[in-house]
Structures are given as structure tokens and as C-alpha cells.
Length: 64
Image 1 (tube, one colour):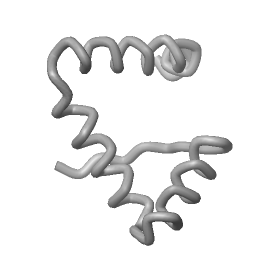
Image 2 (spheres, one colour):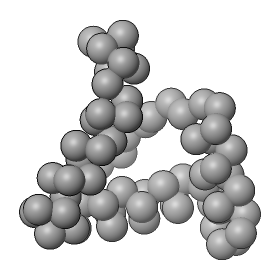
Image 3 (cartoon, one colour):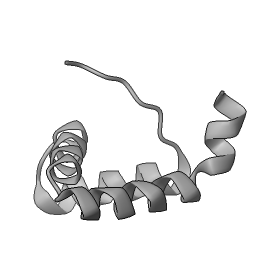
Image 4 (cartoon, helix red, strand yellow):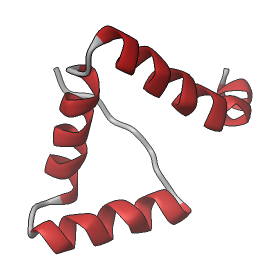
């Protein structure tokens, strides 16, 4: 599956800088991070997902 996401500001800079440090394309680093996130144990996944949702709740509300 191919998905597209928009990131801006600090998140974009952080991803770009990390990709440069690891000498990999930013999209590959993002895909690897997502893969790691999705393979966490259920309880860990739930906690991580809740943190992400809480952090971006306002953004999701405006997009919805």
C-alpha cells in the first residue's frame, strides 16, 4: 500500500535531519518508523497511539 502524508515545520526538519544522520531517504526512514510503531506489542501500541492522538488532537479535529 502507498500512502501520502503532509508534515510541516518541526516534524519535517526532525525527519529530514534524522534521515541525513542515517544516510537514508526521508520517506524510507518514515516507512521504517511506521513499521516499528505498528509491530509494538498491543499494550505498547495502545499507549503510543494514545500519545500521538493526544498530541495531534486539534489538528485531527480541524482536518475532520
